[in-house]
Length: 364
Image 1 (cartoon, rainbow, N blue to C red):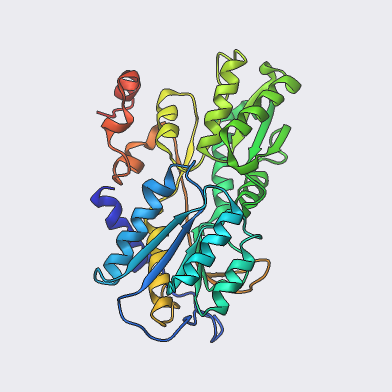
Image 2 (cartoon, rainbow, N blue to C red):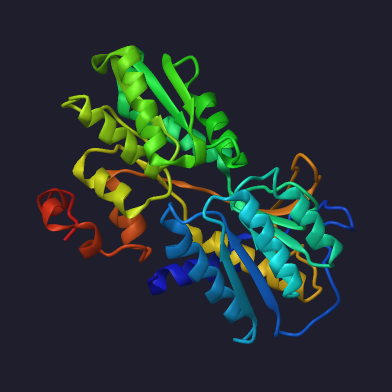
């Protein structure tokens, strides 16, 4: 990570995450007795197919915990590899290891509820990270996920322009086990419904690109390759599978395809003109908020001064939360987003194959 990203992490938490006010006295209450800096933070991430978790989230959270605890805090890490049962057993292991707080990005938001309840019974506060886990969580941080869907939908409409009513749209949504996917989908529909014809729509098991590829192949077979005006893809990994299916079907002029996460491969497809956009989510402020809330809860401190709103989960009302906005990334702002923030260098993006396209965009 570049220094610019680290700076975003610090400034985002200190400058923009003001207390929302109006919370009940219990909101933001710390989870345990006051402790010093030598705390143990359990970090459980959901999978390693999406590049962001190992490349961004984990190191950013580790760095921020170290900063907030003057190097005395320890992060104990586990990745569930998209296995909800494994993640629940990982929570059990961390309870046995007597971590002081858990940060959990749930594989399955419903299935994790029992493990969250166990942690709370053991006196361990829980921060839901990126996905709104069910059960008695103490805090939550993510992106404004319905707005992410709106950003994707608006970008797709902008790409279609006057052709929005020509042809049909295929929607390839995320996994039904991820509550964020439902919000992305809702946000996108709020923008697209009534303005385009949605010919086919799919939910994608485990967010897997190969499943998205199969969905797109089925849509092409059902609708005809010349009848698809655009594709709503909920993230970049699936966009890659979708674009592969379009090429395999002999689609010479690719329709606009959306994405999310600003994965390197996704950014490169945007530069190449194969993918229209992605939603760039600044992981640094999200990770920094999670670390700040986790450290405060582990120390027995309140988090009212960190949160920016309250969110209801299906099982818990008024969860103290920090939500971060996403940014539409297209060819026009690659440098102003992921390059200037230090996420990727121009050398990483601009392979020999993309040199001419990069030169045309001023990425030198």
